[in-house]
View 1 (spheres, rainbow, N blue to C red):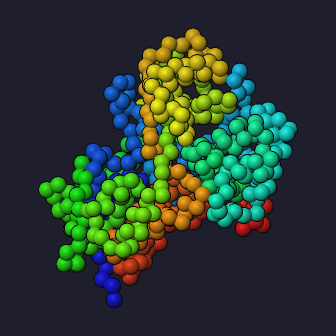
View 2: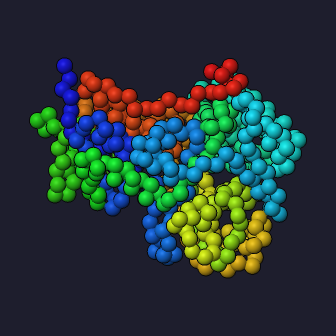
View 3: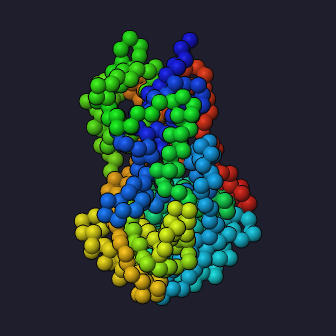
Length: 466
């Protein structure tokens, strides 16, 4: 019979590592969490920008109602009250005309149909093309093939305007990639979960507090339950000796019955020489070479007066995809005079080589096209953050190389949004991976626990397409 491990070292305190550590701590394990950075949260973090002197998030992170495991994680931490939910999305055209997409009382998948039919941002031809595309997603998620989302746009006869104003903004933003690189399988999955299954699935949640404060709740949760968190602790080697795993980090050695490696795929590659070598490990590291990154750029602007009363919006016909009014979204910490806006560009490959001031100048030329108040406002300060490794690229057939939670080393488990979670590169996938690693560990120990929360069930007419 398997002997239940009583201690676990979790390497990496991003969303995946935090969720695994919390689940295992709740199951009675002695958890030691190691993180090379001086903070928890990984890519979902905030810091004081040295140029602006303001606390900013490394990028605006949101969640959707269909992110059931992320919602569960926040509930576990007692942080669910720090998420503000919105049930409508506003599209703004140059000149200020608005299109509001919001649910009505009709059953899914018709719950947004009335708003869509009235939407002035889309012509009748655009709407027919979009409906034709939606109908192709109704029955099921297409299997993984080499087909890209860009090919599907052509195959289903999407108009240029429908492509640019709807599909690219909705799905390319959600998946942080350009259509020619997006897996059709995941494009369909995201669209069904967000727009077709239920009104709840498409609700958008935005944190009321900086990300480091939000995920700091996880550190508090772990500390209160006896877990030990070691920051500024990069791992040098991981070896098994006398039935225990020895994780060396500088002058310290942490021993445990099991290890969870909750690291980005590029960090796993760097750790290759530090892990035991075997044939299965060679296969894993070969697969890791098939992953690539896609960047996100955010532009932070502080004005001397109010620019808009909107909380957030999608911007059409401009290089900038989303605008978030942080003065309204985080009122308790943004209580000074003026207005703080954040612009977000997904899959921002074109902006990566451009200088900071050029990007700010571009933003200041574009914003007055949507908000006239910008012309009379003073820009007090600005910051540009380029997350070059924001997410992995969700390309066709990627699932063939995404590993499960069990690693090539017995007693070592893998977590990270890039592992086989069934979801693309999101915080939801990160939490799922942490829960799946914890499930695999407890299952191997002979006392299987269930942490993963089911997806939202289809509602209304969508129940006919299960």
